[in-house]
Structure formats: C-alpha cells, structure tokens
Length: 112
Length: 113
Image (cartoon, rainbow over all chains, first blue to last red; front, top):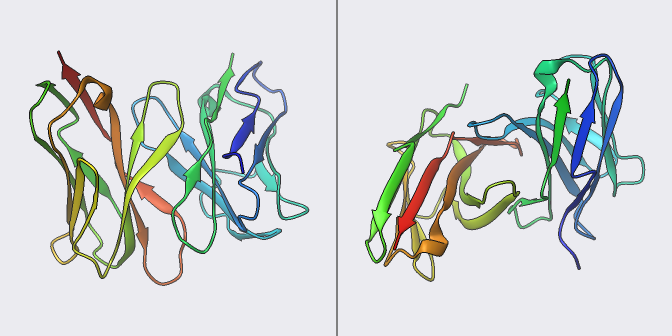
C-alpha cells in the first residue's frame, strides 16, 4: 500500500508546551522506528517498536520523551515541556522481516 | 559505540562523471549496511542494502561495496546526472540482534550541467 506517513509535516510550538507527533507505518510492517535529525547531521535513533512493545528505547534523550504504539500499527511520539534544543526533524520508519527500513517524510518541529 | 564517518562532506561534479562516496565505521560487527538518498526537506529513500556476508550490491547506475573487516563501504555512481543531486547517507545496523541504524553525517552531492 502507501508508504510511511507522518503528521503534521510541520509543528511550531512554544517552549514548555506538549506536542504529539504521529506515524502511520506501511501496512503489515511489524517494526517501527523513530529517529531525530538535526540540521546538517544524520538521523539519530530514538526508539524501536516490535509490535506493540518498545524493544529498544535507548535513544530517548530523557524522560520528557515518550512513544506508544498501542495496537501495533500507528505510533505517537510525545514530548513534554518542550525545549528549544528539541527543534529537529523527527523521522519515522517501518520494516518487515526483510530488514530494509522505509522512512516517512518527517515532521519538522520548531520550538520557539 | 559505533561511529560512522562519510567523506567527503560535500562534492560537486560535472554531469556524466563517475564518482565514489565513502563510508567508514568503527565497529565491524555489523548485520548490514544501507545507503540512503535524502532530498532537501524530504525523508530518506533506500538505495541499496548490503548484508554483512555480501561484498556488493548493484542497482542500475549504483554499486555499493562492503569491506566489513576494514570497516568501509563505497557507493559508486556511474554517469552522474543532475537528478542525482541530493545528500547520500550510509547507515549500519549492528550485529547481535539490535535493529537500530547508526547513520553517518552524509555527503551532499551536486551534479552540474
């Protein structure tokens, strides 16, 4: 079916606010990943889901960041008390057993 | 901790030229290596994936090689075109069951008419 989709494409918020970023993976993909890409850098791993559970959350920078995938499909990345340093492009990817990760277009988050 | 380096950081070539992008990684215990293309303001498009047991993969004008023992991969682009202009990223997935990718900082390629 369609590729990985992410909403919103752009999000501008004020310091201290709460934001949610959504990812719709490719239908049937059991694995879902979140990465963060700062300007001029490669993406950095945040968290990986296998089904509904977080198999590896070692990349989450601190406890202000949290992600869920309650039904094993759509995932939401939640950021509390946003800081200016959280400004980046947040990328979502999904994969099946074939290893290749397919990326969405990303959500550009700007914290003022 | 795995570190991935890409050289050069930027490259400008005339149309038609063959070119090589380099990727090196510090921990050779990888499961696979993947090359991506990223256009400005866009997500990543997978170009080639090389399993740790493979030496190279080819797709059209692209050829990627892997020398796991020396921690190196190259992406060869033949007969470059202006449409090849983009940032090229390599990423490694470590062995031992981890699924996350560790990315390099990319090579920004511009192919000029």
